[in-house]
Amino acid sequence: MPKKTRVEIVRKRSPEDMKAMLDRLVRSKLEEILAERGEDQLEPATRSRRIRQIHPGFERVKHVLYFEKWGCQTCGKKNVAHMSNAKCERCSGRFIQRMQQLEIQWVRNNPESQIADDIDHLTRRHRTARALLEEGEE
Image 1 (tube, rainbow, N blue to C red):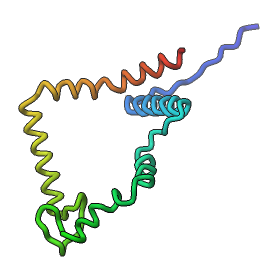
Image 2: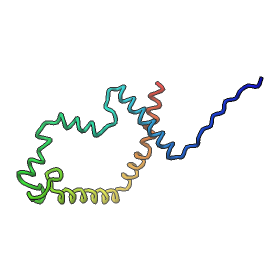
Image 3: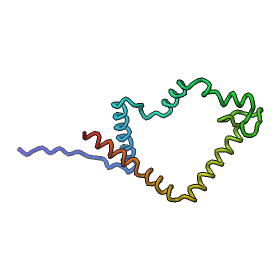
Image 4: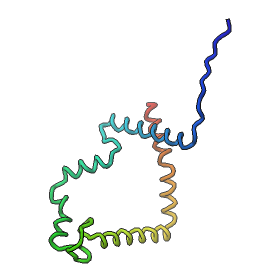
């Protein structure tokens, strides 16, 4: 009697599917390890809400109180909406834009630091996956 052969048809996955699958696997393994250690899961919004809840009351409202009493920290206007850090929308936007310009100029003047950051960013997932796999083997 001939031996029965089992044939499995495996669908070829696109590179995007493979990347998404790897991302899910790494994230799942990382969450599992963090849970074993008793650390928070990868939920920054939840974590920041918890931090805000235990933060002293004044720290949560100090910029609002400043804005109500003296107006915008930069231009002094009171009849505008409070945006963040005791600044109106216009001044807050200007501050953010100027900081972005400073960063761009700094990166142009210090390209070696950007190269190191790019390499670190590109290899971070690989290092994390390798560390997780090594931990799993122990």
